[in-house]
Length: 298
Image (cartoon, rainbow, N blue to C red):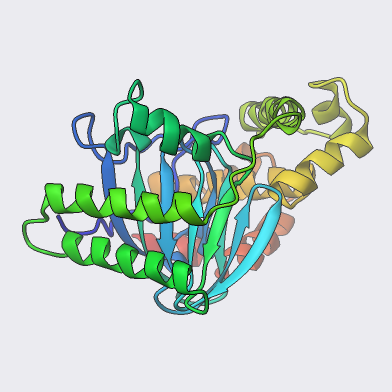
């Protein structure tokens, strides 16, 4: 099963949950060979999924924003991202990242001893991610197994049973080398904050065409402006207004490709009152003018 190299953007719902399925119901596993630089905004934008994810940085250096933390990872390192953890990958130039995304149910049935004893503790732990480096022998072994999994996927006829065997080995090594601390008091606060963030994001996604202020966003969750700023900066490393502007630009980029509307009309329809400001921000983010972007995507 060859890697899927066709995606250039992350598709999510209003809560930033990724909507593209990873594999099928009978085989919930997918291998990807991607270049972060080829995605819109040169990043794999904020998203989360119920599946777990393992990534290897094959070439280049990228910023991995996982939950509220930022990690700068270079070639040869890897990372595990836990289920339901919001994340984003950024690149300043080409960065090749083979990766796998799969449901933990691939490893064992949810009502089994294996799942209860070895899988659920990792999923329920306080660990949002785990970094792997070749300098640590145990982590180097994880990276070797991960490379073996990728190699199997590159075969013309990828072997599902071999993949399953290697995934179980990978998980055993992960379990043995993770500091699995139970998520006790933190999750309630974290869940509440995530819910508040999602409510605010949903408000932005629904009303981006209108004029929106920080006060408007704060009112949706009955919080003060300083608390809202803190939630955005801690969880997605930007301000609410910056997120709004970038969301508008993404919507505008889509309209440039899918419609024949004028640049001025698209700017107006995506919430920009001033077309000059829209063009400046668009070029700042995409490195090309709206017109050049449209021609390049034709």
